[in-house]
Length: 388
Image (cartoon, rainbow, N blue to C red; front, side, top):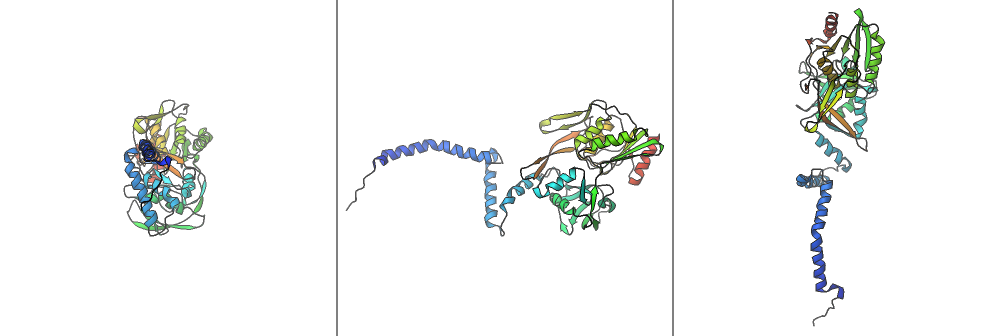
C-alpha cells in the first residue's frame, strides 16, 4: 500500500523554490568573491589567471607523483629563484637564507675566510665568471683573473645560476684547501687549481707617497665606510703630494653612494651620475661640496666595475682625470636588495646609470685614454704621464 508522508510546514515545495531562487540570486556575488580571492593571491595577474591554475596543478603533480618526497618548505624558494633568473640580466637573483650571510659579506668590507673572488653569472653561456680577484688574496696569487670561468668547486659542477652556492662552497676555514676547475680566459684551457683558504682582511683604501711627490691611493672595493677612509688617507698624504694616481684595478664595485661621495670631493657642482628606471624616470645625484683640485690619473682594468666605473665616468666627464690601462668591465646597472622575514634576499636590477654627459656604459665599459695591456707596466706609465 502507498505510504503517506507529511511534508513539514517549513519545507513545502513553495518554500524550497523560494530558497533556491535566493541561492541563484546570491550565486553571482559568491562567484565574484571567489574569483576576487583568487585574483588577490594570484601572483600572475588577472590576465594570466590560467597560469595560476597551471602553477598550482604542477605543484600538486610533483608533490604527489615525483619519485622522491619533495620538501614543500622549499617550493617558494624554487619558484622565486626561477622567476629571478631572467635571461636578460645576470645581476637579478634570489639568495636563499642559507647563503644570505655570505652575500652580505661580499658587499660589506671586512674579515672573512675564503679565497678572495668576486663572481657573477655569465648569462651568455650560463657559467660562473670571475669579475675580479681581490688583490693579494689566495685567488689573486693563484693567477685567477677577470674573465676566467669557474666550472667546478671540489669536483662538483656549478652553472651560472648556482653561483651563490658556489661562492658559499669556496669560503671555508682558513688553512683548508679548495680545488677549482677553471677555464682560463687568455688560453681557453681548463685546469685544476688548488687554493688554500686564508683569513682575508679587506682594507678598502691604502695609500702612500711615491717618488717625485706623487700620491698613490688604491681602492679595492666600495664598502660602507670607503669614502671616509679615502678622505682620511687623502688628507694624510696631501701635504706631501703634488698629484695623485688613483688605482681602481680589480675593484668590482660595491656601494654606489660611496663612489658618489668620493667624486663629490673633486667635482665643484653639477651631476655626478644619474640613474634611469622604469618608464624613463631619472634620479640625479649632484655634487654638493667638491673643492679639491689635484692632477689625477686613474688606473683601470677589466676587473674595474660598477661603482668604480661611476667614479671614473664622473671624473673623466669633468676632465678631472685621465685613465691608463684597458677597457673596464662594463657593469652599468644598479641593484636593490630586499630582505624577507626569513633572512632570504631578492636582489634585482632597478635602474641603468649614465655618466654626467649621458653615456651608458653597460656591456661596453669605459675605454682608457692611454692603453697599456701589461698590468705590471700600467703604474709605470701613469707615473711617466703625470710627471709631464
